[in-house]
Length: 184
Image (cartoon, rainbow, N blue to C red; front, side, top):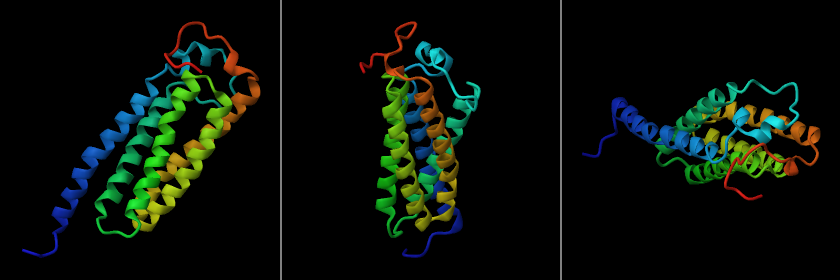
């Protein structure tokens, strides 16, 4: 039987991908964020001077849960596009962007490397833009699903840069207690 798949079969194929990719991206993101305490749970971060544009602490887990879910959906859309030209490159670019993203929380909150974390955000933004463009060449919907991530990363980059400027020597600021197993 060499016929084309029905719309229902195609939809189920996408859902099978999404059932894997969305939880996987969420799990990776949450694992990365749990390596070192973040927000007010991190004494070092709580002691930093933060820019006025810093959102309330509750906004970060809400934003990241939403962004990771959208990233997982975007990946599922591209994985579902079997035979699409550039699919392998797009997936590789996404993996690089996600990998860089997963390094940021332990680098910033655990190792207290504010300047290096800002440079990492710049690399995250570039790799995210490249992944978004590559996804857009395959499925426009997948690219649009990554746009909120790019906006948030741009905003996070500005916050990180401002924290770096407001807290010279932040890497050497002694936390109120032990925050991680990472040695900077």
